[in-house]
Image (cartoon, rainbow, N blue to C red; front, side, top):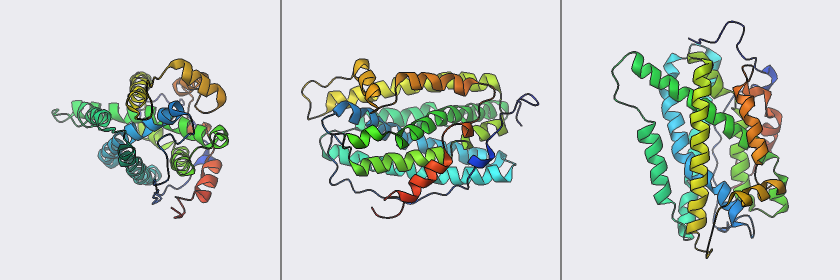
Length: 298
């Protein structure tokens, strides 16, 4: 039962809703170089962190949502959650399949992914709690945390759909298709996690608290991930990840800018926020209709 104040429920944009379906995709990494953004290992590895975080993270999303599914009484939301689960499972598998390719090129991600697996499977996993309120509290905390994370996956999805600088730089088309297929589906289902949170809880203090935790964890994990890649890249003699490099790539359009990330904060924390107010379902669907992988070309 949502505990949002009467009349304070954020209003979705009805035209942005779409029936969700999982698309079976596959990617051939045989011709994708280690530095798939030519002559730019920093941008390559900054984005490669997604391959470290998403397999375990999206398996965790699916695990939690299978637990919350029996609590959903709205039939349309239930259908959305089932579609969300199918899409996230495919995202996890697609990013997981990149890791052997990185290892074959001399960059073994196992030491980092083992830590990420522990985070989602143990620290954020099912705890041994007595039945009743403690277990319900933990489920709601995780549902709220997923809503906060999904705010940023949708933000990144919208960004990569419009990141023409990557095309101009000659980024590998297979990797771009993976990122944009995934990003388009994140935009497509961007409202689901927030709607589930409103349905089972909706408390503003919980939304703000879990956002702070999720955002801090993402920043921490991302900077550790890019440092791990830069320091272990076999093609670099003295690979370093710096905030200055990030700012430079942001100005070039190769990465989201720090200002854009900062502007996303008050957006999510607004009491009138709803994910459907940001991004374009039409743009996402148009990309999915053209994606080589989503249409079986790869």
